[in-house]
Image 1 (cartoon, rainbow, N blue to C red):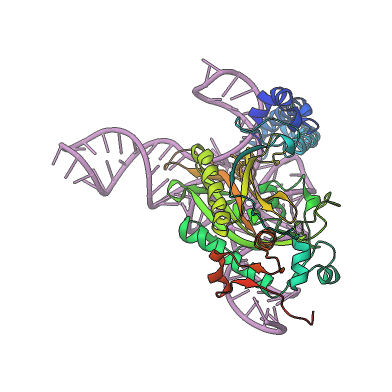
Image 2: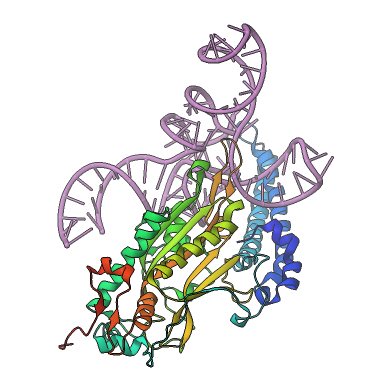
Length: 422
RNA sequence: GGAGGAGUGGCCGAGUGGUUUAAGGCGGCGGUCUUGAAAACCGCUGUACCGGGAACGGUACCGGGGGUUCGAAUCCCUCCUCCUCCGCCA
């Protein structure tokens, strides 16, 4: 959410400067709705002030005063209704207005305008035609798409044997690096969250269709970003507690509304997937540098795993709702012959902090300030397994275990066929 | 799931329909006094929004929401959280 005085000042400028981001967001109506709300509030407060004056004396009011107060009651009620309506209309607009892109973000309407920042590693020369994971996995007996569909439905997968262990190993591998080498505190949060939490991180009210909801009002978290960022919702942190660095493994649940037909094969886009996430709450002046650090820390995991990748900066038209700047890390997938998004590292500025009221106080007696929030995937387990299978495959269809992962696989160096009896 | 109790400012805590403009205390900030400090004494103390160059003025906020009333921290309804007990349970 952006501050009201800022929107009051800048609504026309934002519309003119970033049509690819602000067209049809309701920003066109902001100035008018804000004026209407303030007029309504001012009128209401004037009447309430009068009522308070009449009721301020000791004992029972005079008959005349009583008469006036009875009349005021109706006026106040009408003005309250009007003010609530005006406030509701304004809130509906302002909760759906995206954050302002950082000045270093490239301009453009869609992903074709994203800017490649750097590339690490080189696609391997296999000497044979590499298979896609949706062929490799079932052939090895470690990915079972049919039974995933039977048990739950489309976009669910069963991991078996080495894939299941690989999943567990990757979770531990990522967490260990974040905790032991990069200074994050490990969190195991609830996997369900309430509406306030989802509002705080920006999924609600605009993107509710992407979420799974329980019949009694909970939401399945789409990412650990939600519960972890909301750890400090409605809190004022001490300066000594800044910055806060958290990492968390959670399963993630996404209804993938609107993604019909995209990435339908294999394990790229699932309703349920595991992910290790990192979240930072930092002082505002440090958030730009923190985004670089956070991105590099997540790249480090791919480097350890020996997976070629590149980093792109999302352009203004591709940038997520609450983000000021996002680096996507894209891993090379030889079976699909493309770089595919594996991690998204974003600086939200104070956008989430304002929605969730996460503040800090620089010193005793000073006014609380909003923190800046950042988060990044480090890493999504399913897509990382996909990347390992495709990048480490051998001519016979078996797969080498990346060296860094072997200790987490109890020394296993290669994944072969599990055996018959599937 | 059932029964009972409780939620008031940074913290403790009083307040059961009209000087509550939320008592009192603690903590914090400033001052007087002092060579300095402590003690004592005096003053100040939150958040959001509205009006306004500003100073300042106003409105709202006593767990959330709704209601009754001319008027609600106080009465009613509902939800949430915590505590005690019962039941069930990995």
